[in-house]
Length: 125
Image 1: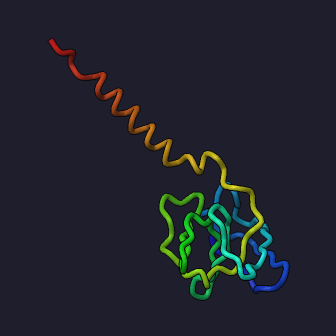
Image 2: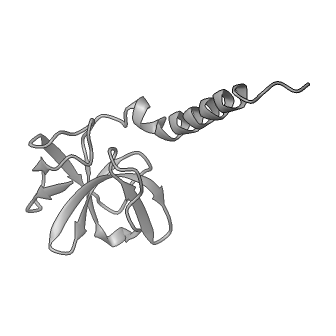
């Protein structure tokens, strides 16, 4: 999700795109707190500099020098970014439960499919 931003205290950006749905909608205004010597935490939504534009995604992993992000509506994480690219933390609701459970739901579907497939096998004689 891209944002139009010029950094200043009390920064507010307009969300562009749907990668953070349902937590953030296209056109929604979001307040950004600038990071001041602290690391972003897993679960926070951060604004990062990506070339000449900005991206607003959720932190899924923080390492000593890099951070891994993922949009709530995206199936895969973004490539790792240097921590120095993180500009600030967005004031947004926590990730919805159903978004966190996406992987568990897929595993359950596979289990159910396998169970029903096994039920169709002819009975042993």
